[in-house]
Length: 84
Image (cartoon, rainbow, N blue to C red; front, side, top):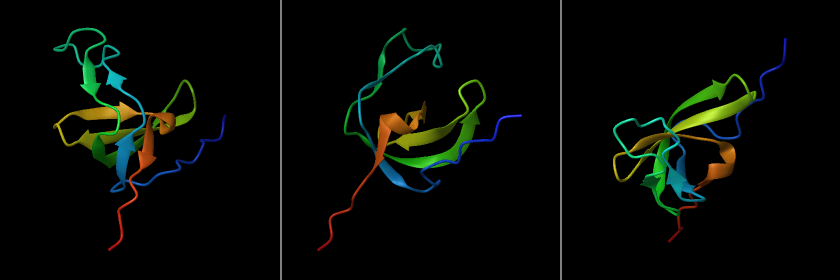
């Protein structure tokens, strides 16, 4: 049995999309390859799961446009809030 790779991010963390995120077939009501979330869109991790086949963490992120999208670690980065 393979050890689970621990996630780098926790639920509740505010993040930015590092790249445009397109429909990979997860949203059958959207056209294939439709833009779901634009690069630099802000969101919040609402659930942390695990992708069985690749043994990698998978993050459900709710973005400001209302889309909830499964993201890999390389697709998101923590949002650094500006300090006053």
